[in-house]
Image 1 (cartoon, rainbow over the protein chains, first blue to last red):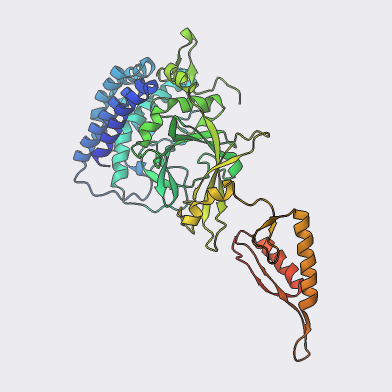
Image 2 (cartoon, helix red, strand yellow):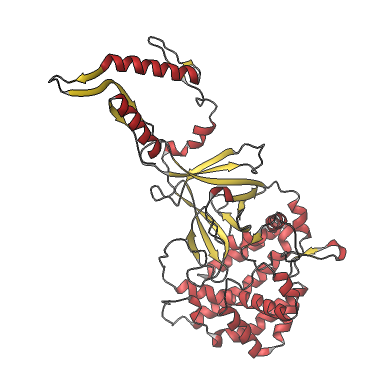
Length: 285
Length: 193
């Protein structure tokens, strides 16, 4: 991914801070995090510039360059300590105290772990506050945010891959979808999903649940509000899971990963009505 | 679904302040939520009724599944997942919403009598009665039992049948059975759905 994409995200977050004041705190936080991620991406790009283009026969997560990543982890944790709310800042401070072996363990544990179960919404609050499981959940979250630029860089080096069907997880890294996107195609809109880790976007079916595979139309619906018309909550009444989709045919200037973060009220509404999010975002919604 | 302690959002009891588990304040978002008019909509796959190409369409309807609420069509667009049209529609297909919502849409049978210039509304019962009567009369008058060489023909050349392009294969199968039983030889449809 070119640096311009990071700039677009940061710019969009700053724009929405004023237009969506109800999400201002989270967007300001995200803007700072994305700025760090942009610089980390640039460092990775510079360091790996001479490497051959990736040809991944298996998962994108087969390789992990700790020599490149670990030196950046300390400043990342310091940033989170400075800008995040108390629970997250405390988690960063706790991990910072563990030193390099602990950082390496956290990074490797997340990178090579099962992304289907990592950062799962159900039970996250219990894990977060629990003593033993809580430490793992906190470290997974911090490692996830830190590793996003690296995963995105690797994904950007992959040549376009042809994927059979419509997989429910990222065909490159196996991550769950973070947000759906509707892009104009013909006289309608084609749906695609964006990976929570490497931000790879892959084509998906319009009426199909990425969580349980439900495709019966009466069980699939979406909720939207005219005040935020370009964001819809795609729900499955079979497994009661939801995923937000950003309709770029309505607002072409939207940046899906940012607009997903900014529309917190829709998450609150979905939760109140018994739907569980497929994948939490960086703000914990 | 009831709220359980496994719920993702943690609502702290202290001061009624709501926050995500990461500590982000949710109070402004809750306030905004009260202002939103959130409505349920559904997408249904269907097939354009106009021609034999059979383009896939998505029909959007609003309605909250309540029994006293009739779902209402709000939008029709091309189905990007359909192998025939991949989301594209011709100008006629693009106007499908009007096919369903136009107040001038015909909802009852009409007949134009011989020599008349206007269409006249009739009831379904009257339409069926007249169709049956004219079918019987025409068939009796034009039925060919033997051809010019005296060979058995048993055909009716005075009636033809054309099926609409929204008819299903199953419907068309029954049409052919019924029309052939009357001896019709001129029948056509756009069997494809």
